[in-house]
Amino acid sequence: MKKKTFVLDTNVLIHDPQAMFSFGENTVVIPITVIEEIDNFKKGLDEKGRNARQIGRFLDDLRLKGSLQEGVKNEHGGIIKVALSRHISETANHILITDTNDNLIIGTAFYIQKNEKDTKVILVSKDANVRIKADAIGLKAENYETDKINFQELYTGFSRIKIEDDLFQDLEEKQFLTNNFGDFFPNQFVNFYRKSSENNQKIITRYSIENNTFYPLQYYKGEELYGIKARNDEQIMSFDLLLDPAVKMVSLVGKAGTGKTLIALAAGLNQVVENNYYKRLVVSRPIFPLGKDIGYLPGTKSEKFNPWMQPIYDNMEILLSHRNEKEDNDNGKVFGKKQPSLKDYLDFGFIELEPLTYIRGRSLPEQYLIIDEAQNLTPHEMKTIITRAGEGTKIILTGDPYQIDIPYLDSESNGLSLAVEKFKNEEIVGHVTLDKGERSQLADLAAKFF
Image 1: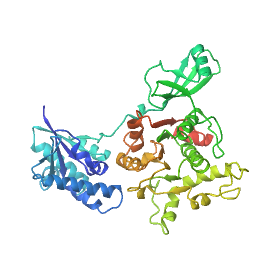
Image 2 (image 1 turned 60 degrees about the horizontal axis):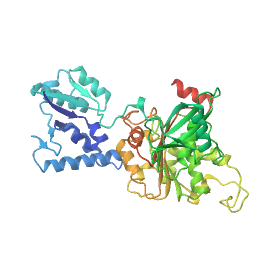
Image 3 (image 1 turned 135 degrees about the vertical axis):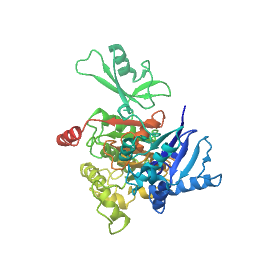
Image 4 (image 1 turned 180 degrees about the vertical axis):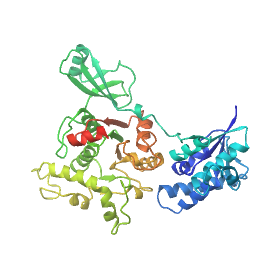
């Protein structure tokens, strides 16, 4: 069996600085062009800059153990090298235009393949165009898929089972049903349908792994939360997780218009403002524009952040405009008036809108933390955010893995999809995939057809 040599593209290391250690006992080659590209990123204050600096630290530690030109053995038994490109143009000049960094990286892999006949050389890149060009010159190329799931088989959070009349009646009367139907995940919802019913009579239950039993929903009974009610089973299940203090992380995945953000905000306002279960509602989302960026913005941090938070403002205005006026002086009139505005909630500290850029290093105890558009986060960024959760904090992740704006992320490798799959066995985590659009008939058609 031939030895394998993996040549890494820049985007692989920027995506995951630990990637150089992820290829077992094989040889990993980092072209000098990659080092030069990483050097251009190291002064940035964003995730790319932090990853670039981490790569430099990893390589510097390896350099102290031996020569990177000859190869340094890592703790996994593999060898890591940094390859110079001074001979590349002689080999690849007639095939590639070697004045572009991508082609120099391809050329490095091509040179190794030509000169090390006993080695199987594989170029690893998250850029589809790089992989296509590599394949065109007879070089094997692969995507970096260490953190990747099958999105078509993504955990939905619920299932449907038809049961006999006697079992259905037992569930109605006793308000529980012992599991004899197979394996389920913690907090998984099961819709039990009466087999003989022509009108699809059902009871929505939630699975308790602690005693292997299904229970009807305990935390959401169809009431209004800040003026809105659940419109379908998926939203009912979502509200039950959002209102359960024992569930510390909830992920809501769904196409545009399914109500993910709106119901998360409604539940958050209910828990923070009306019930005082948490100190404040913190809402954040990645700052990444759709289409062309509008450039630098004047003003304070809040003013700069406003364009990216406008969808949150829109949802909050919907909730506040639909909120029932409360006449009870003890429980209502939080601000001493009937119609509190969003500014009032912000000024009184009930709500905090925070760019994800500034969340690193923070500790957030007793917060109701909503991360919107979470599909635009890398797995490493997702880890950074979840580890901010202090004692008593609940994290809500919402997003649509089909609407990704970040280069080199897709529906199967983004932080949201991976979080759903990696946490589905945990008792303090719940998930629901929402499919039915509720924004409008037109929005639902657009989500289906495009």
